[in-house]
Image 1 (cartoon, rainbow over the protein chains, first blue to last red):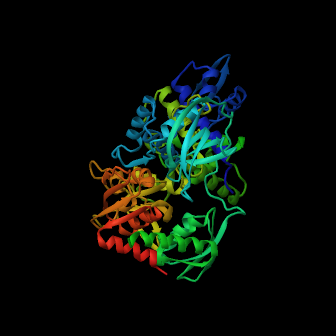
Image 2 (cartoon, each protein chain N blue to C red):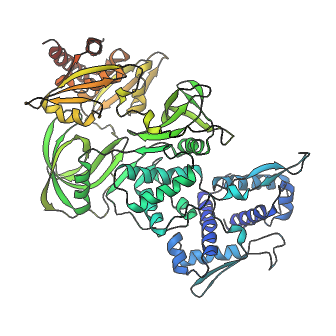
Length: 310
Length: 307
């Protein structure tokens, strides 16, 4: 049996709040609540708990003293808790990596820069460059981001990844985010009349239209990972050892693994996506079944061969 | 929950003030909340409490109680219990909290626990129209980071073989986490993708290696996939005008690009990994052509004609 995460969180908060109150005598209830996300009732409950704990003997001289005196939070006889617990490795990494990620986009505030320097001195004292997070932004991110922040509609020239089709669209940008190594913007697309997600590096150009829009209070959580749907084309593909990465990278359904060939069912919004993948794989991928993908692959092969034979 | 928290606070108060290793029996007989009738119930409770302490980040060590090493007891070393105070201001804490809210690691943003430990900050909701997902399971990443920061060996399975390496650094680039450093007993810097590593475990000894002075983890990971590899070729590639923008965005500063009046490009591109390079050029369909050298051109044609 393990202890519930709630217990762990409550303990962490108590063991963080105590050192702060000890170091800041005279601190107020509001200050402590604000700083540690407490409601007044919760804080009082935790202080009551602390009050009945302490050192063996557990008499009046052994227990900690913790209570609220009008507006003041009082903690005494708890000097052994005057330092906060160290960060766990995942906690330290999350904080540092989050900050470094923002910093790598060039949008860090001066306060964040300073905070990261201080944290790095403590967490990686001998290796300033040992942890690197690189979310370098394609050039359009800045414009799209300020459009989203200020509620400005944008006109974009966008090239679809799957088909190469280029269109001009009017969008209301909501959220700009980076995932799986690429930057995306979720937006209401007026041209399509619905919510769409665009890959920012596929935006060829962007112009502010001068038009404003009211962004949704809470934009819907964008879905980036491709999920197969009914209109998709399907193909069965066998992958040799060197092509097995495909199964890690794309949402495929594994049909068979005979040790030599891994056979998967692959779906894509356009046959060209699967055809390009097969072309990249060369001898490491075989199309087992999928007539539309087969046609697309033949067309792709012939246009490339034509170019190379002229 | 209340009982658990009281017991843990009592246990921790006892351990932090004991100034010597205390045995499990002493804890059972001294600390309030452990008065259990059966040995089995006590043992289970104590095991759970030890796990809880460790999950909070509290270092709990077992050490001999005397020079004869007959008996062992528990210690929470005061210097390891806390981090040195980084001396953050409230403004700096708030900036960290904002960053932690918009960046997801292992599928979710970091909770406030880490920030509480650093002294807390008013936890406002993020208003930035920005987000980033750094992927990866937090367990493996945490283990790798612990090894990088404490300079421990790192062990894991990679493509069917067991690896033991000295993790000089950890890098997130192009959507993946990489751990960088030499295999144990070899001078060459290697790069491993963390999501392909299984059973990632940090070794028991801290300070097991020295990071070379001025080591920059990012230098080991190239700007483009075809720039990492053993080969040393220069490719000449023509890109048609409609795709020129897309080529430019993906080429790194190491490529030399010439633009023709019609908007098409010719680029001289250093290639260290021909396989990756050919795969990339194929992504342009018939909108790009490798002009030279012949071996890359033929390599591409071999892929196109493969059956």
